[in-house]
Image (tube, rainbow, N blue to C red; front, side):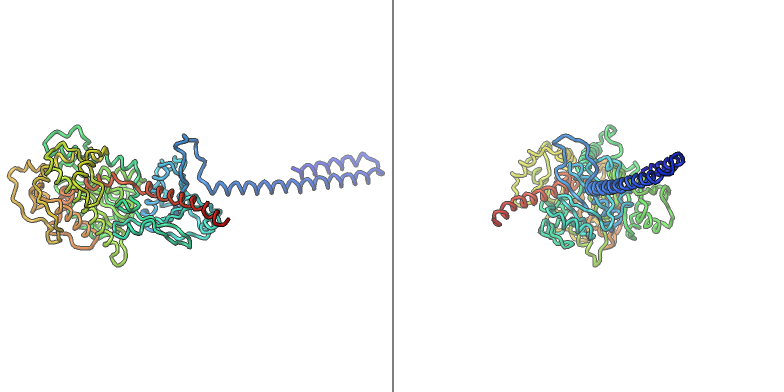
Length: 580
């Protein structure tokens, strides 16, 4: 604009020169030069102001980049209590991203300000829910390396010991005062309790190990409260429905999708790595008497299935194998869509850490393909998990057995005895049962009505069940098949009475089948996936009800971080006093 003014001024002067006398031309030229110099000075000053404004805008942009989007005004008691950064480097495709997204979402729903930095946004965006974008205190950010102008939040979570780039390291070094937490993988091994919350030195920075697990002395499981509430509802419905069926009552008023009747189509979800041990399961599904709808997800699971059935199925295809098995190929789904499939399937075949945690809480039978590691390290982790699940289920079952023996009452309030201390007395357990108001306890009260008859007939075993005890021995045939509830003699040739399968045998069945699916040992003779699903359903429901009463990862993580922050604040006055 200043250049245009200068041009117009020169044009006007030229026109005026035609009208002025020669003796005044020199005077006019001098004035033009002065005006020109004034305008040039103004241009320089204007450019300087523009440059200063640009620098201010750049500084503001840096500040905006280092914070989450502007939060909407919310009630005072719902304002974020903590500000948390999570760093995710994708290694196991959807697994790492899934764990981090579930944790970030759970923390945000608890009212905390959360930023999730991910180095594979394409993977993350595939599983993100629409609700995630509506959470104003949750930011999903691309982790571009090196990360520029990084300023950490008060809690920084390094998921699975990923390597920080120089930008992140610089930001952490320049802005101390944060709590650094190194999130480890899920495990049920004995060392987890002693390792959890110990000091950690990663990326040259001091922090603490956070170890997810199944006991109160670990970080708990990465599960959100909303999903747990849905699982408890499903458990209540399933327990009530099964009880009605055992008593030959009409279950029409209950949720049809949860029916266990053998003449209705069952749904199996399949999400796996490459695994040749899937073939016997597919063969068993084809031989089932009950129609089955197999939902397989694109990617490794579909590639593996195509290799087994010798087809080239793709997303959107449907294939009928024999009369009883229909295969449907699904794309990778958003989290809430996958949750719906887990909740409504009869059997969930899952892989990795993120999927198994959610599948376990539903109470539906599951088969877990653990992430393969060198030197069979993953089998050690898998056996530790199966052994701990057996320990919990047996303890709950034994508590029921003792209570029934002592009180002989079907109306006894029943709850899960959460204290795993073997020294807890029966009187203590009785008081816990009376005081437990949880939804899981409500479900278990109903569960007891149909389980008590079975428990009364069980031999009380304390000894371990070895591999040679599986498959189950021959039993006397049942004369009245209606008493069984479902015709199990068609599911397993050597088993004809549901009440003659002790809980230990069912747990052994789960362990043997899971190890076989992970290629650790052959499947048992006469293997039937239908028998696995039917006989082991009560075990999976008991395990799920126990899990649904436990404190989750996000809650325990925040508690620990808050304690460490308080310790640091208490140390500061002491250090200042020492300096004085």
